[in-house]
Amino acid sequence: MAAGNSEATVGQGRRRDESGQVMPFFAIALVAIMAMAALLFTGANALVLRRELQNAGDAAALAAANLIQARTGTKTGSGCSPVYDPNPGSPWPDLVTAARASVAANSPRVNPANVVVSCPSGRENYAVQVDLVMVGDALFGGLAGQGLRVATSSQAVNGKKSISTYSIVTLDPYHATGWPNGRKGCPSVLFSGGPTVILDGSMQINSACPASDSGGALGTNGTAATITLNDPSRIRIVGGYSPGSLTITPAPLTGQPAVEDPLADLDPISSTGVPVRSNSRLVINGTSQVLRPGVYVGGIELRSSAVAYFRPGVYILKGGGIKIGAQASAYSIVVTASSTTAATWSTDCPASTSTVHACGVLLLNTAMTSASDSIDVAAGATLKMRAYDAKADNGPPGAVPANPDQYTGLLIWQAGTPAATGSWAQPVVSLSGGGNANISGTVYAPQALVSLGGNSGGSGGTVDLVLQFIVYDLEFRGNSAFHFFYVESEFTKPTDYGLIR
Image (tube, rainbow, N blue to C red; front, side, top):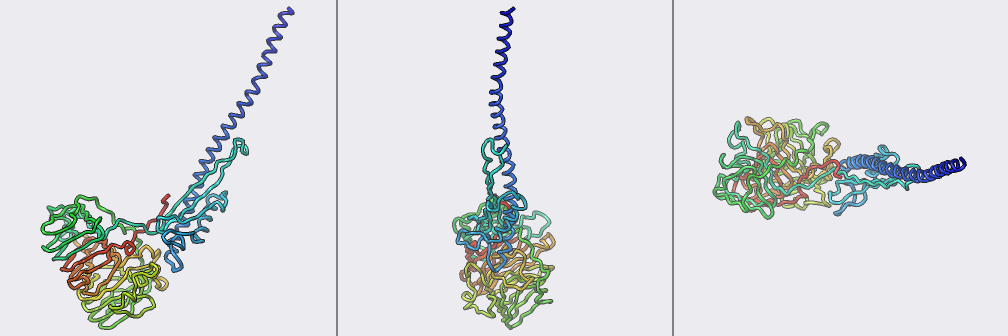
């Protein structure tokens, strides 16, 4: 019995020893499990924090970007930074304030000192960047070490973006049935007579008219027209064309994809609150007159040797369009001037002053009801105008449109309403002129035919124009040589808004 009891006692002691050995292992395992849980919690918390910071940064970038366009429309500066040559410097203080206020509202635990606002390069000073950084929480006060450092970056843009180098875009899609010949996109670009055209930018013809239908989307009714595109520009046609005697170098590309109207997102310009300069058609006959931006009900007409001097700003032609007669003259002038001449205009109205067109104007043709509500510059007229520049618009309260910078580079805009139909054609935008035409900028007529007639600024010589056409259809008439230079800074660029990163 004694021996048996001894063995039992030994067994119980061994079990107690084994039980005692389990406890340290359990403690070690528990610490490991808790450390793993802490790591998982810290990682999960970092992911949640990253999403919070990204959302806050995105909202802050948009809040700051909202001020870029408002600032651009003022005379005190433009874009994200007051310094841009060619890379932007530090942002305007109010952009920084707006970004930090947004972060404080959306993620109040972020230290304002950790909200870094900057102006990224490569976006022409129209973008803003917000960088956020924060260290996340760790489980049990840092049992597994400190929380993870989380950093996010957000960019938003609110300004102009570069577009493909088009000198000409015609938007007529082709109407196979229900539209009369000459208006169904066959052709959409027409060379009539014997013009010589040199293009530094590409030509895009959206008409899908096949060559079998009236010769296609590109055509000529003369035998002497010559079209040359300087490398790397090309003519791209959605449909086809029959070259016939038309000489084009290099040959056009057919069967190409259509492009969207690059200016379709321009905000309409409202006449509400804009000063009315004339309640009925303004006719200037044989005299000189200085005109100011505003609404011209019934349009403007220059007769005989009349001279009109247009101060910088937007001219809303509310029905009636504008007619410049054969011997009449129209000039854009700086706001402090009261006159100029054909000989001195290029000095009086310089191409740019610190990248600002100090005498730029925008002619907006709207409220059209008949063919007479047209923009018509007669052969023999003098037309010297530079395109609108928001930074030079010194119009009175109400005359400057909202977010005006989006219209910079726009010279002529014929509204897209009422749209063309099989039974209704918008008034033709006719630009002829004699030996005295010097115009630059974008001509935008998304539902109208634009006709470059006669000598269109020349008398049989070469006409050098810095013009871009985004129009429904386009035709060249006469025998002059037209050279269309492509200078992107002179043309309208569409406004881009939103998050880009």
